[in-house]
Length: 74
Image (cartoon, rainbow, N blue to C red; front, side, top):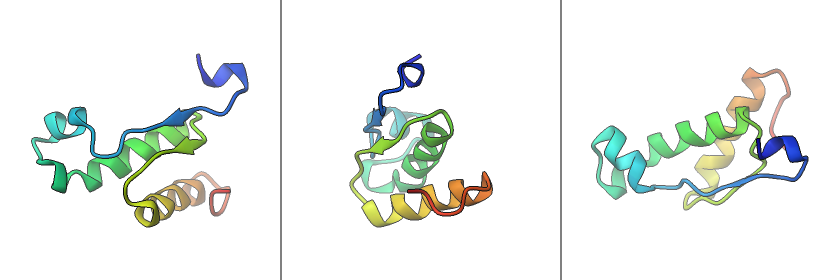
């Protein structure tokens, strides 16, 4: 619903509790879960991402964009 407004949607899921609870991981072991949620968020239309590991997030989002046929994310 939020993406339908046309405004850029921000997600801030980096290392959040729900990732730890879902995967049974402590905060310092949630990187993979965070990247997975970022990828799904991008596919669902999110365009702004608040993260702790910007370099890893960039790589994950570039991979999603490449798989979707758009090259590196902008």
